[in-house]
Image 1 (spheres, helix red, strand yellow):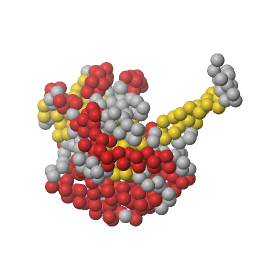
Image 2: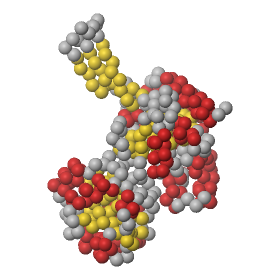
Image 3: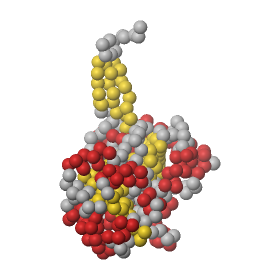
Image 4: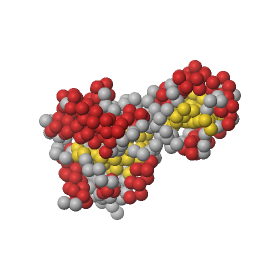
Length: 418
């Protein structure tokens, strides 16, 4: 059997499973999710052992510390995975929910209601928790899911997928509702994004090269979990201690994730008081600073920033710093160099807050808080399947509602159109 034929079989299985999932009650889906969570707990040691193999292979392959951190599963992180599955189970099922209802003058009753998308394929790299989060969200919304993780997490993803499917089957999970593609062939991605009639939506989570290559080949709708070039702007009115804490957290709490701060913009009036203690904190945390001329004049230990630095997602303890003359300049810089992911302002000015939240064109815009909160779990969504930097059909953390579409159900009593 050729790869093309194998992928068509995967797609056919997912379509059949999606039709069975659409018939399941919310109670049944919740029971499946609980069984999935319990099986992950039962197989904890096997999953962690599989992850150790991936970590060892990653070290031998020269993966960076940040990428290894994304790949790592610990007992604590696995507890979080299980908790996320159960949180999804506890949330209200959006499938079948009425969005709106109205009556036309001719008596037709029109109801707009949520329905599953159908078959969702997700291509992702590094983070094995995506396997569990994605599966839970898709089962809750009656979508079949095709998973294609990166080769660096193959053992971890396989162990998690086996646990999820084994647990789910105990409570009636349809066969092939969750399918993990283990083939490392690059043509798998091309096949997935060209399976019209079998795959309804592709979600991309990975590096810029992967996303651009796959998007160019796609024949089915694609949503991009694009890079996170996240900014924090420290306004002239900011409280310095608050700004120091927010910026340190946004950069250092977990630098290898997409919602970590990559660029720091500082108003020129507050820069002499703020930047030296900020640079000292970053030095203690091992952060390499790169700055423009004005920033380097205030904190001389910085390296010179290049033009490419303003567009770069480091996913590491590297930060680029720029001094700006106004909030307008900060907003213009963010809208030009950012990735429309998450951006923050630290300010005590209501006028600055209004301008920033209105004019910054990003999926998540923060006032006096760390960008690290852009996350489905932190938003109370239980988990997320990705963070969309597109504008259609979803934007920001994608959870249950974003994994549904809608249809119109029209009730009449014999009306015909004249």
